Length: 574
Image (cartoon, rainbow, N blue to C red; front, side, top):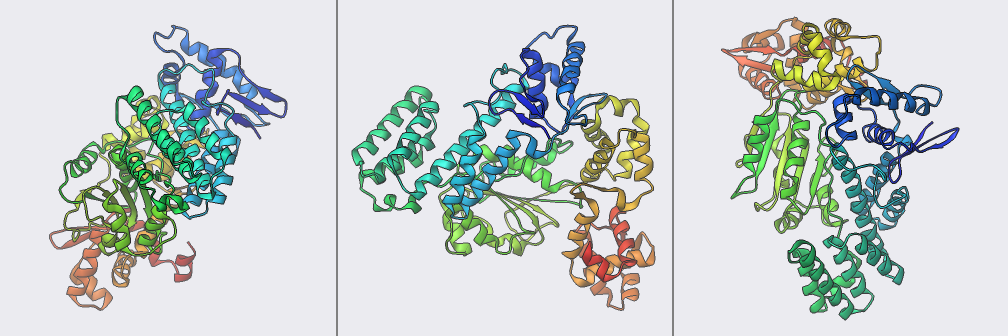
């Protein structure tokens, strides 16, 4: 097992001890590989990161030389540094990189804060911060090009974890050590308003009202000098409360809670969705009513990925945070969101609306089956906004903008494939690449799964992949935790019983299309009932409708065939 470190100086420890590359370019190459573990780094991206400008003609040869030296270090009995036509990929497990361990512990800490358990939060967050051996990631790495973004993002994650840790400490009580710790953190980051708020609150709770007011004056001076701005609304409210000896500030419940940033990671590859992103952005511009965007499309078309990408782009408009909720897992969505924002409290939609009324929050609601699932979660004022990834159009949400996501165009599907496996390979084997994306139905999820299977088979090329995809049914669209069949079954289970039986009918009949009359006859129901069931299948993007005929889509057809030949026990066990 390797022990790789980027949170400070860059080094790798093996059974033979720690290795710290002394040559700047070799150190930069190692840092780039660690920061992009388990992803292919193209040669162009590496050169851009390692040379600020005007790379030498020998840059490619130099990178290969540095990589050859690192390959001898990056091994624990099996090679970890993999060479491809496009560049290099470093294989690491999550526990082998300090940045991954830090992210996991920080997330546990944030969850504990949201659950009203500051003691556990302190434990997780202090362990996370202990992994940092310096105030900055990648010490000794020149910050230009891609490194500017990679390392700055890590540094910001450390600041947020420290903010959360100090909030959790405040919730457990105030002592001199905590006040000193907050002051030291402000020396490091004097323009971070949240820290000044923590210092004001801790000083006030320690009984030093005048000291708390001096802290506000110091914050005012620092912000004016450094950014030419006044303190924000949260600091001004706290200042007003201290001036009026607000008793509520003395309670641990009044401590400023961590600003939630719960969005899943934005997709690394989001191809061909510019029009949809633009439509979502327009829905959030100058909205007089609470902006709500509903994204829907076939299983595997990337509705959730688009929702996350759009939420990440809109995030700066919502300074009070972003909340994420998967409705496939939440038993009481309103209660969950209230607890995320306030800790244990009333589990009522009215309470949620009260909380959202004076905050600028963005809600991302995933795997929504019906309007009834989310109607009680929508804010009453335009201060907050909602993005919904739904299984069907939610046309009864009056003010919602519906964004329909179709499979990618052929060229965009090829572009996504190229982004995942390399532009040179797709350009060289364009016919085979075209066969791959057609076998994937131009669906982003299917393309992602297919490329994952390709990347783990060093002896395969695009032709091999295309041949397998065209002959393997749904079985070939599974890789690690990604499964097209699982997603289809999840959508199938959201159908009402009659619609589910109608989908299975396609498999029993072995037909690509039916009329409502044929479905009614086969199922022993009225034509009106058959139309209702087929319309639900249309809404759920299992079938398309035209001129009275309903045609099943290819992947739902494969599922219907399986359902027709699967016992109920087998279906439940999947």
